[in-house]
Image (cartoon, one colour):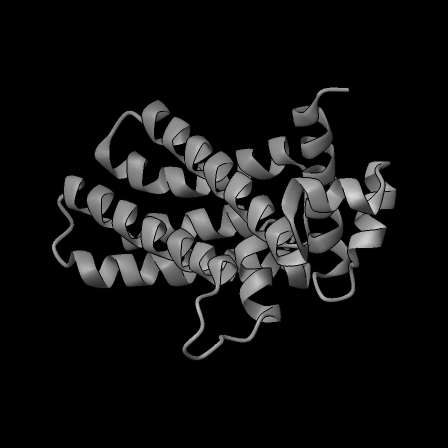
Length: 187
């Protein structure tokens, strides 16, 4: 079996287990067993549990960015390009396999911030937020929204609330509800 196939299998198992059972309670031994590899093989590919989480989040961030950009490209108006955030969420969950909610929010909720220490995992959580805010700002500017900073802040709250609602399990269609709310926020 190719090295990349083994790595992908490890990352697939880790992503599913981390974001359905929880990061803290999912040991590398469980990930290795689920992926059908020895623990030594897992460590050869990712180095540590933090390295495993970092690799999962890097892959997830790339996949999410690609899906969002595809949804933006499919939109026909500047306003629809802003709303494409919510269309991308629906498609991303459909195509990437479900987790309880957002991998980045789950990571932020389970990992305390380390004062003064560099944390590559939390750096990825921050990168997700930074990219989200920056891209939303571009799209809101293109749509000609009068108060872009306030609109981006509101959209971010709606987006985050929709993701948290997935964890809560209510409402039945939080992504559709979020898109409807965002639609009202835009001129």
